[in-house]
Length: 187
Image (cartoon, rainbow, N blue to C red):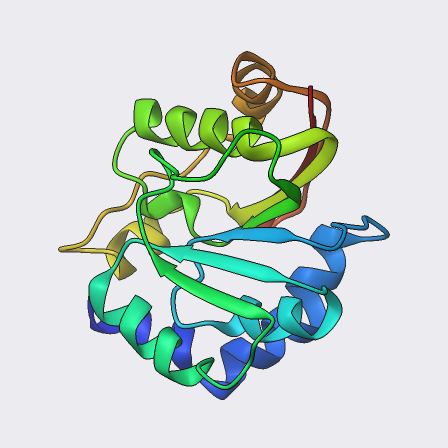
């Protein structure tokens, strides 16, 4: 990540996540008692999710961020921070009661890797379990903010087909001026 991503560790970002983005994306969705979080980054979403689910496993690919989160949540027995790659998860099929990935998919370098991530999440979710995902819409402004970093925004119009191909059903996508959110159920 580049220096512009320091905003993602700010109090302002944490407040936006807690008060706007997660309530909007999650709505009334119950993720259950054993939740997988993909790409927690600086942990703003981890903070919120850890307060509302019985067990949270957060998988972060970045070594430094995973280490920082591991230290931060070391005394929280219901949170497991794992340094890992969500395109090749090490969990059994049908393990998790729900999954979430917020404001991170644009960091996955290719569409193929994003689709592998979706397929892996579908594999480790129990049948009928929800994946809730959200991200910003692609823009020139965000492309500039990601200069020198990976920026591969997801076109929300493609999500129903991509999530269905990955093993999800009952796919719903909502879009606003600033972002999209999707809910899909593992088959």
